[in-house]
Length: 138
Image (cartoon, rainbow, N blue to C red; front, side, top):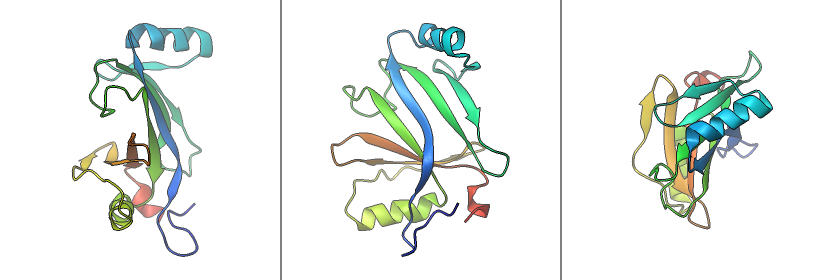
């Protein structure tokens, strides 16, 4: 799967994760572990589960419960944040800026990949994620 369409415009590859606010992230994650079989991990106060893709696809999907006071979602009224996998984060962020979309200047790069953020048409913070080896997929 490539990160651009027939016209060469960058596009999202799929859902990378769903992040939700929770009054008690640990208890909520435990509920998902017990009821739905999630293999829950502690991400330093946020608790979540990772779902691996097929061996040929980079990355994974993740579900994470964050404390209600998290600033990761931007506005405190935003109850969730979507994370989308992309093939070329820098190209997509440049494309979004050129299209007049509000894009944050900050890009985080780590062993987990590259992360950037924009705002959708209703002002919701959206996270864009390029898995560590996605550049090879093209």
